[in-house]
Image (tube, rainbow, N blue to C red; front, side):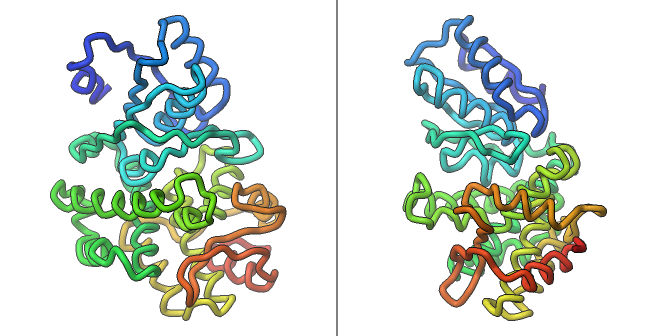
Amino acid sequence: RHHADAAFATMPNAEVFLVEEGEPAKTLATVERLGRELAAWGLLRDDVVVALGGGVVGDVAGFTAAIYHRGVAVVQVPTTLLAQIDAAIGGKTGVNLPEGKNLLGAFHQPAAVVADVDTLRTLPEREYRAGLGEVAKYTLIAQLRRDGIVLAELVEADAASIRGRDPDVLTELVRGCVELKADVVAQDPEERTGLRAILNYGHTLAHALEASSGFDELLHGEAVAVGLVFAGSLAAALGRIDAATAERHARIVTALGLPVRAPEGLDESKLLELMRRDKKSKGGLTFVLPGTNGLERVDDPPATALQRAFESVGVEG
C-alpha cells in the first residue's frame, strides 16, 4: 500500500502477490496458495521473489522461495523495524503450527537485503514499538558479550530519539543491529555450532507467550521484551549474573517503551509445555542465558529458579 509502487517501478516484468497481515498468515496454507499462484503465473528457477513488507512477509515469501522448484532466489526488502534488524537478516524462513512458532521452515539466504529507514515512518506506533523489542535484545547481547559497545551506547543515550523515529539515529541503529547479527550468522549460518542460538536470547518464553495467545494478542517484539526480562531474572536466580545486570534488562526494555510483564491470566504450566517444544530444546527446557562465559545454552534449570523468573514477569504458578 505504501511502498509497492516505488519498489516495483524498476521491475516492469514483476507481478504482485499479497500475503495477509500478521502472524495468523504464517501457515502452510499461505505457502501453498503462494506456490500455486507463482506456478500459475509462470515463475521459473531463474526468476527472483522480492519480499516487500514485514517479518511475516519475509518469512512466508522466503520459505516459499526456498521450496518452490527446490529453491529460487529471494531479495528481502523489509519495511518494519523488526524485519530490518532481525527477520530479514540471516536466511531463516518458516511458518507456524498450532503447536508452536516457526516449527516448519528452511535456511534460505537472501541474494540481497535492502533496508530503507524512511519506510518506518508509515508504521503504526505499536508495530514500530514492537520492533524495539529486538533492539533491546541486540543491545543486551552487545553488553553481555562486551562487543558492539557503540550499539549499546547509542540505545542508552538516544532512547528518546529512537522512540521518536529520528532517521539519522535509526540509520545507525539498524546498521549496528545488522552488523552484530551478520557477524554471528557468518560464524554459524545454520545453527550447527550453537553460536547462532544466542540470537534467540529472550525468545524461549517469547515464543511460548505468542503461541499461548494464538499469535494474536502479543506482537513478537512485545513478547521478546517480556522474554528478556524473564531471561535476566532466570540468570540471576541461577547465580549466573548479579542483580544489577538483571535489573538492566528491565531498564532497557522500559526505556524503549516496551512491556516488562506478561498478559494477565497466563498459566505457568501451559507456558512450560510450550517452551519444551522450542526449536532449541533437546526434550526438556532450553534457554540462552548470560554468565561468566558470555551467552550460552542452559538446559533444565531448577523449578525454584523458574518460579522466580516467572514471578518477575507477573506469571503465577
